[in-house]
Each structure stands twice: as structure tokens, then as C-alpha cells.
Length: 88
Ligand SMILES: [Zn+2]
Image (cartoon, rainbow, N blue to C red):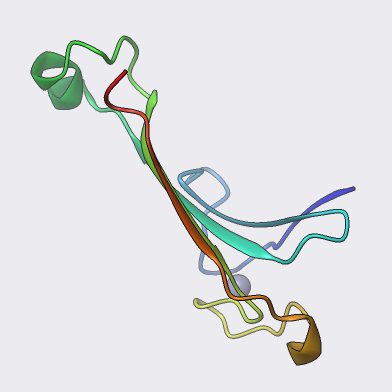
């Protein structure tokens, strides 16, 4: 089951920063860099405004914006991932 933290500090329309959880996975802060018009002009690999340029995922126990506790501390697994989609 997919869950998303609803946060007073994260505008729902600001979809490039998400705090999400899937099934028994830890909570993840996912930050996307989405292509702008300038990015399209500078990188011919990108085709559409809003394409994902890169993505960072960090496991979190607390929301870094409002401070709400999302998970029990004993469930904390520290991990980090970075995906760069701007080169194919
Ligand atoms: Zn929050």
C-alpha cells in the first residue's frame, strides 16, 4: 500500500518533493529535479518540460519540514540513492 505524508509545509502542487512509503518499506524523502524550458535547450536528451533529470531518495523517520514522526526509530534503515536520468 502506498502512503504519502501530507505536510503543511509541502504544497501538494509542488510534486518534486514527496515523503512516501510503500508497504513495509521505510519512509522515503524523494526529491526530483524536473526539466524546465532552459534545461531542454541545454540538454538534448530531455524532451518534455517536467521530465525527471535526477532523483534523490533518503530514508527518514521524521519529516524534515514539520518534524512529524513518521516511523518508529527501531525501524530506521539509513539509505541513500541517487539516479541521474540526464544521460542515456
Ligand atoms: Zn511534514
